[in-house]
Image (tube, rainbow, N blue to C red; front, top):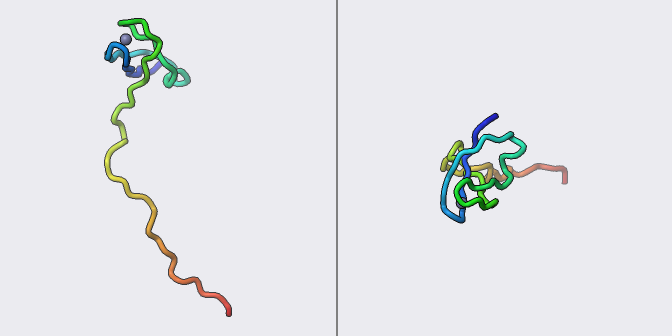
Length: 66
Ligand SMILES: [Zn+2]
């Protein structure tokens, strides 16, 4: 089972929890204050900067029969 990092907004504490992938996005119980509001920390994985995208590709005149 993989580990996920959670953060409790109530007491501002971070902790690690071992959960299944199906449970990873569900709120977790904070071991510190017991609040069931801790949410998963989204680690800076591949959320790097650098937008981009596929825009600015205007087709060059489609011909057509008149
Ligand atoms: Zn807490």
